[in-house]
Image (cartoon, rainbow, N blue to C red):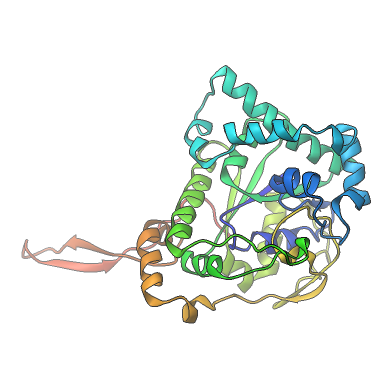
Length: 333
């Protein structure tokens, strides 16, 4: 299965929608929110139906658990609190887990595995499941499941654009507009940006196949990015399979995303353009703050370059300022 990770507001839902149009794929949205938003709260599937009325998810529930009523939501939440938190990543990143911890992690991951397997079987089998849950801690939990063939796409976006996006007021259409998406201060989003992106960089060093994609590259050349990710995910392509992607648009069909950004409800032709509003709208003081807090990873991902002082040949007290080339960790599209 393909897990799309990164901090929210980085373009993960857009990427899932684009990849989900490929033959042989099945996008499920943010499965991390399936348990409370869908099973418990009966919010809307991306198809427009309430979760309880969506025929696709009804069949998945029957295959996976004999019906959603048989899911012990209290147990899922207890396991999530015990193993699926950012603070647990150092433990989950280890080479071994204590026996008790291993049992808890694999029990938790098995709830997801059953959903993935049931969804794939409902679609005829041999489908690449796409889960855009984003959270690094969940990816680390899935890493320990012996029955999940995990590949990860790590989506990064300029931290200043992400910070600005988190300050915006966005209604959640699945609640009828009664609720808003979470908002964070620029300082808070900067710290979350650091934590999530650093965690995904470390995941690659733990043997999980990880491919990093920059949001800006995705919007600049969407067809090439999707084509290369299909190769990474072992999805064979035929001539014409990418015709739904133009240079600045994509034609999207209906889907059954369980949760995620409101754009999961979009069907038809959508524009593909970079959201650079932050350059004008994010106050300069906040821009500088976010840049300072996230500078090391901004530099690593090629968003900025930092001056580095190197000794000149002579005299000994003279230094020359040069610009360091960004160090790209891992393979990037």
